[in-house]
Image 1 (cartoon, helix red, strand yellow):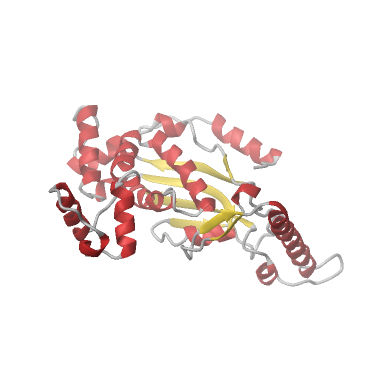
Image 2 (cartoon, helix red, strand yellow):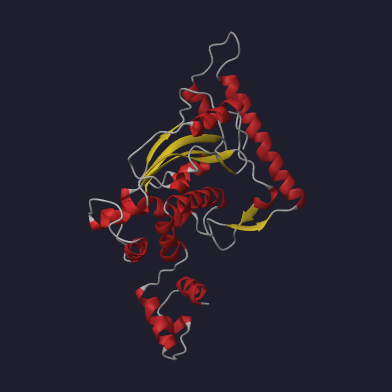
Length: 301
């Protein structure tokens, strides 16, 4: 993730500033403010601002007027109770604002989470950089034969080399034409808002993304899951580390009851109860489809 000297100087200047405040602060996320955490080949995630901490969640749940009305142990127990019983509103009292640099095709997945505030770099007004996501060889995979939106075996040898060369050549050619269409010296050129349509989906964009903790946890539950697409999952994993530093009690509860947990259908629960009672249950007698049965077996082993 190459940062220009000007970008690094701006980050250093931001981190050198210190302001007194009466608002609640979180030491873990304070230490992360403005730093660029690398993702993929040219991407990054930066914390720009935040509001609230673990105490803000419990304060809202109790509708109390001050901090420290209960012990840390009680706060932890309350947060776990709220997470366990799907009480979402107290988690909405915390917010996080991120600066993210990411490929356009990842951004199009990400924007499906419509519960955040987003402001994206505008290619109508500015010229995009010549930066494209090119997968590392170990992340080049064939189409899965059993999952229409998944990957299969990793490409190797000449096949992998051919694909990488095509990706690099097409990206550079598209950018060359992008520059040419906007005009060379002495030419009027095409408007930027039209020239951008020729760029591929692996070109990098940037945005500011602000979200409350409840909706951030929903994003992370889906995108940090092992089944999520690799290119968005690595962003989610970096954000998980940041959230753990920000609200450690809430993140521990999220990890326990969402990220590392499983949800069973009503029929699935009945199947487990029948098995515990000693009954031999098969897919045919379970009342589950083949896919539901496979998923249940994946949970209970």
